[in-house]
Structures are given as structure tokens and as C-alpha cells.
Length: 289
Image 1: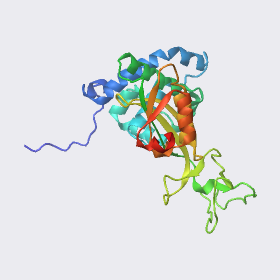
Image 2: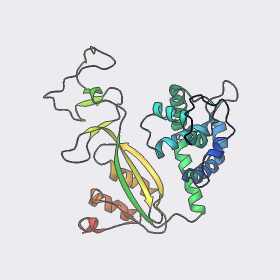
Image 3: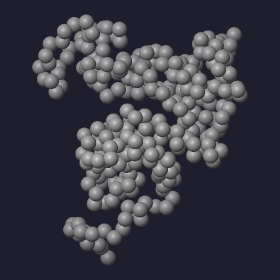
Image 4: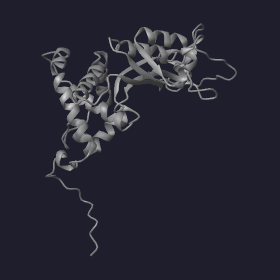
């Protein structure tokens, strides 16, 4: 028998978001770990917020929303708010009821910025890492370091000469800029909206974009990220960030680190020797001499 295509929406729902997410969904394990980490940070949150005034977005929900954005590669916070609004799964993970209104994107961005300025994201990663260590999931001897370009939220139109006065744009919202025949480098040009971003490409012949250099240190037992750094994309950022992260591992016991050929320099290998870190792999044969 053919069912009827009813168009009238139901006014009530008797199922909570908790009941709608299947028991074996991968996000359940992630939610449990994040909740435990956030509970350990409660005292830190109390120090960051005033005792009186209008309530802000709970920092726990802010961090869970940011985690959803990274796990599902949501390209913008505006789109993130839209997807949380209509996704039962996302609402459950963040901790919102079905009838709870989603936040305005500008309010979300302002509150999220406060957390990042307080270095809360790094502490959140540390709390999750502590859980992995308690379960003996991480190696304390063998590591891998790698870096990649992180595209900045700045348009190439904002990459302008440092030594000349710019004329007022014909359209402030989307100005027309003629770069034909102009050589642009980081020495002569700078972004007007994000001065720290630098022009960089992933290789010869690849398109150059305003970018940062994102770096991570991974332990080799289960491939868990144990440290991360973001540097300017200045050409040596990967090696500089590697030494910063490896220095935090320095101790009495020698550790090993693997990396690609971009790290194969005598200076890096010498610093690794000083830190009791042994680079391994065929990439380092020339540097070890």
C-alpha cells in the first residue's frame, strides 16, 4: 500500500538528541573524552569569566563546536552555525536541545576568540593527551614531525606594497586591483588585513597563497598528535617548529624522530644531537655525514 505524502510538520517530538544518535557512533567516544577533558578545565574557565553580567556562550559548547568544525571540515563559522542549526547529530555533540536557538555567528566568533587568546585550545589538547597517556596509547620514544601550509583568511587583493600610499578603492567591499606585470614578494608586499600572513606555495609551479605554516609532532605507536605549532611561512618554519617541539621532549632518555627530506639540514641534525634526539630514515644520511 502506498504511503501518503503528508506535508504538515509535527509540532512535538518525544525523542531527545541523545536517543537519535546510534550507540556505536564514532562521535560518542570523542564526546566522552572531550567531556572529561573539559571537566578538568572547569576551574580555568571560572578564572576567565566575570562573576556578574550577561551569561556568555558556555566555553564547553564553544570548544565542542570548534571540534565539530575540524572533524567535519566545515569551511567557515557561518556555515558551522547553519549546520548545527539543522543537524541533530551536531546539536547532540555540542550539547544543545532541538528547540534551542543557535548562536549568532559574530557572537560565536567573539567568544571563540577569547578562548584562543587564553591559550585554552592548547590546554584542551593537553588534557586529551593525558587521557591517552593514562591508557598507555602513546609512545615516549619514537616520533614523527611534519608541517603543511595553512591558508590565511586574507585575500590576495590585500597583499599590497609596503612603501607606497594606496589610493582609496573604488569599491571598499570588493575593490578591483590590477596586478598585471607586478612582481610581489614578502620583502616588498604585505597583507593589509593580516600582516603576519606570508605568500607561500607548496612547491615549484604551485599557486602561492597567503599562508601560515602548521606543524605537528606525532607519536608513532598509534599516530596521536602530541604537540602542534603554527609559525609564519618564512621558508624555515618547519625546521624551527620541529626544534621547538623536540626541545619540549628533551630529557635523559634518547628519542627518535622521523621526517621528510625538507628537514635534512646540518643545522637541524646538530641541534637534534644536542637535544638527544636521533633523526632516522634515509633522508638524513647526507646530513649525518
